[in-house]
Length: 147
Image (cartoon, rainbow, N blue to C red; front, side, top):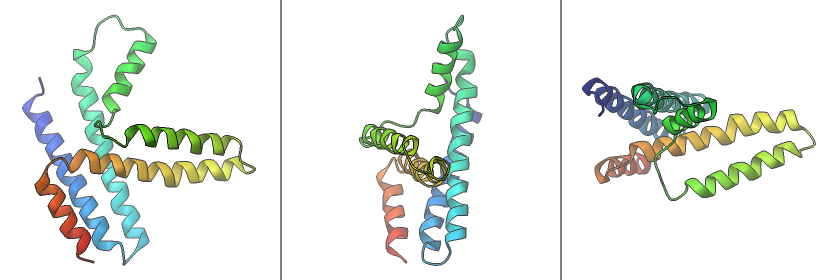
């Protein structure tokens, strides 16, 4: 039930994420700032794709949802692809969050949690979203073996 423009936009976001991930690998030995820029670009296109998916599916939601039902529908729109590491990463994120809450320096710990850990979680979700076929995985591995 997805429209043609949504497929085009999703394909564009996938290509942009794939380009950003491959570019991250190429600039890995050169510059941390450029690496973080490409990481931010990949995450940006990942979120754009998920927001677009949620907007397209919004008219298809069940009518008469209360606040909790609407929130669940929105969270389902942002949900990542199913992968084997999703549940262990959720448990690890919970453990890190608990360590932030009980930290001696909660502000610094929260900054590190949000700035570092969640960035890598989103990059993992970008990889899961983009590397869905063998051809893209092989190209990604070629870029990975170049530097």
